[in-house]
Amino acid sequence: MRDVSALFAIRERYDDLSAKEKQIADFILEHPRESVNPSIEELAERIGISESTMVRFAKKLGYSGYQRFRIALARETVPVTSQLFEREVIDASDGFDAVFNSAIASLLETQQSLDRGLVLEVATLMTNARNVYLMGLGGSNIVAEDALHKLVRTGINCQWAADFHLQLMMASQGTKDDVALLISHTGSGYDSIALAEELKSNEVRLVVLTSNPRSPLARLADHVLAVKTGASVAVSESFSARIVNLAIIDLLYIHVMELLDERGIEQLNRMRASIAKRRV
Image (cartoon, rainbow, N blue to C red; front, side, top):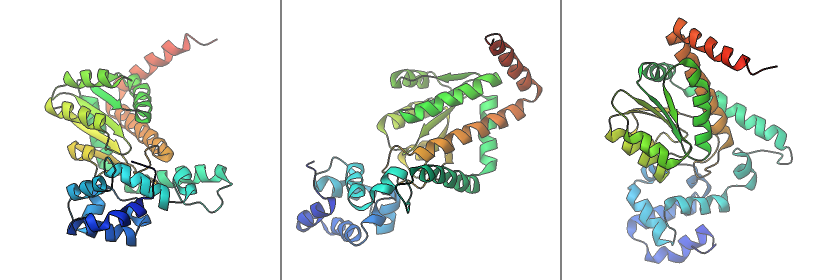
């Protein structure tokens, strides 16, 4: 779509909208900034219409989908500092404090909200699994690789790949005795959903690590580990989400090691001895 104000597009096409679409338009025009952060599921529920109506509304305005519309709305209504630093900042010139404060706030919020019993349950599934698939795309794949770097030292059988097609091939070989940890900030990417659907078709137990627990990807999961961030899910490159994800990976690693007990320590010492040979 042409680069035009999202709010202007609503006003321009208002008379062409259906009654339910006008209900969406009225809410967004009255609460433009408050309409950016909620997921499509949350906003649809708040307005009292279906998600499919939200999608039709965005397409009638000329956008390829609701996500594209929301990004345009965010650019228009959310301050540049919030788009850059993920949270509202008083002095945008001080990026040093903004970056650290955003990460600290996200870590504390997640620490308070995360279900500790669920984390232990996921760690138990990983410990007893035949294979643990560590998956993600883009920046989330870097987090998945970090999970491999941690968990491989426990001795459990971990599998990771950078390429989407290789991940899809791995998913096709899964069984009910396997566990997959699929990482996605937004939980709305077509490829992430394709991986989840392939895993579920093979009865692999699916754990999703995401900032959007009401996303299409989260709805496919057996277990959802939810990350709290100050960023809108319309912002796909949440920096603080990555930091919290890494902390959760560390937590899973610690739980797995505790569950493995002496066997885990033995595997860890083997890894340390191997690495030590390569040091001066």
